Length: 294
Length: 102
Image (cartoon, rainbow over all chains, first blue to last red; front, side, top):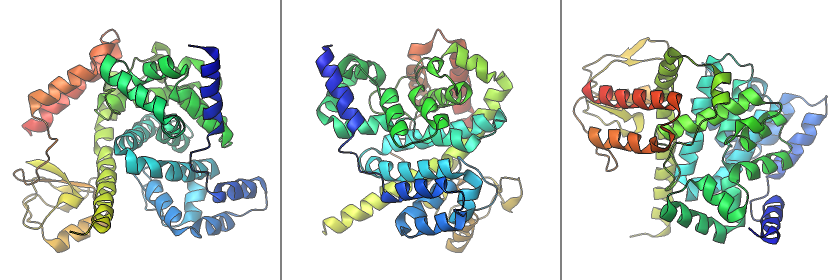
């Protein structure tokens, strides 16, 4: 690949002009979070001004991949229980995934499913921040959305290569762009000032050996992506389970019994994901019904 | 017997299994015939799915058991050299078989 071309792709994806700008609310909340005098009530108030966003947030917060025993009905408790980083990432995913929901229900399902696996695995390992890890799982493929929005022509080329040459999307991206969605996702997360805890699992989900500080969380997201693909939640023509890093698997140290129980728990929680996609589809059907009356 | 989403439940369907809370408390017993009012109550209690008698919901993407096993085989085709993934594959196939036997 010519260096010029690669540099151009890199620059375009770093600038991300076509992705919807993050809602102003994120900037505002980030500023508020930096001020030690800010209370969660104040933050909750800012979010609740946007009714649609607030409703989406609560829907995500109450979904199976966080698995709180009681229903969280207020934004205040959501902020306290999940922490600001998670809320911020959820606002980001709620806005980014709005495009995905419409255009790519499959990727949305894959992402929600991956979040479920991450949550189950993180809790089984007794990690201290399962909510952050499942959030990383939720947005691990955000780079795919960026490539689709910023480089639509190349995105089509990638799809074609996956379909015709039966290679994985990751391989096709590297061949056509000289970079991949994991790397791009990492840049985005960095640009949005997400903490390292979320950046590394995103940028290293195909190769957790690259993780410097967050090796265990990166291993969990790497494994989450593999398991959910194994369960049939793939994306487009790339149906194959990607290879697993041995080192990551050793780090997770899961026994055969663990695997069985994890699969049980995931299957049960995936019903919530199926409910999510059914809702989206019926919303879409309702919307298209309004557009073109019989 | 079929597992369905609460959104797919309809009056007249019969429960083939107890509906339980996460803690294992029985909300509604096997054999109960669903009414609109009951479905609504279960939904309010955040029940996500039910197991009902027969096969009332048609899903055009639904696979037969051999198709499902073949699909799993295909997905794991490129990671045959990674033992833990082969273990997961085997378990997923066994679960697919078990789910249809119940």
